[in-house]
Structure formats: structure tokens, C-alpha cells
Amino acid sequence: MVEDCEDWHRQECLCYIPCMKRLAQFFAGRARSFACAFRGLFLLVATQRNARIHAVATVAVIILGVAAGLTRTEWCMIVLAIAGVWCAEALNTAVEFLGDAVTREQHPLIGKAKDVAAGAVLVAAIAAVIVGVFVFGAHL
Image (cartoon, rainbow, N blue to C red; front, side, top):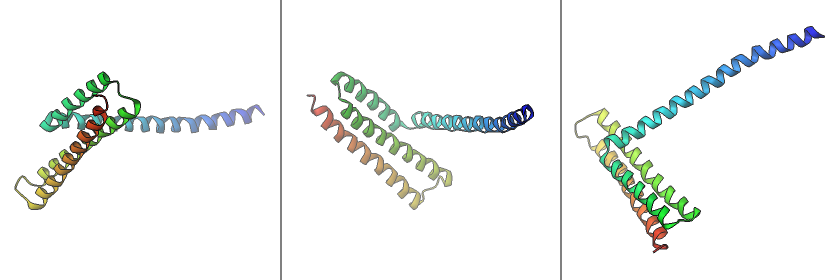
């Protein structure tokens, strides 16, 4: 009976070690993914003038929101608007980087792709301003 118990314990341990190794590999992979994401955000702000403008606007809106005492619902609207602008700007930058990687020469399709991506940023920014007017207008 004791042998059965030891056998079972040995089998559990043999199964447990690879499982822990896979779990450690999983978390290491996620950590690398987050590192790449943060490197991308740093690259976005470091290389794009408009992203720095968005950063200043983000900080200003957060300060105004705290001063105005926004409700939880209002904060949700503001955060979604800010996130939309940042996502559009990041995707626009990615399109620009990819277009520049393909060729530095003028290409009509690359130009169209860049224009569409820039248009998406414009739409997101206009929508964010409208949200801001509705949210902050109620506090004036």
C-alpha cells in the first residue's frame, strides 16, 4: 500500500515539474509581449509629434476631469475617447512605418493607406472633442 502511495506521488511530481515549466514559459512569454508593447508605446511618443500632442491633451483632460469631479460614467466616456485617439494614432504610425519599410519613394497605394490611417486619427480626435464637450459642458 505504501508503495502504491509512493508510486502515485512520484507520478504526480513527474507531471507537476513539466507543468510548472510550461507555466513559467507562459508567463515569460507574456512578459516579453508586454515589454514589446511598452517599447512600441515609447517609440510612438518618441518619434511622433502628434502623439506628444495627444499626451499633453491626455494629461490636461485628466487634470480637468479630476478638478470637475467627473462621475464614474463620465470617466468611462473620457477614457474610451482617449483610448480611441491613442489606438488610432498607434495604428497610423504602424501604417507609416510599414509604408516606409516597403519604399521611401512616393507610391500611390502607400500614400492612400497613409491618408486613410491619418483620417482615422482625425475622426477619433473629433469624436473625442465631441465627447469632451458633452462631458465637460455639463460641469460649466
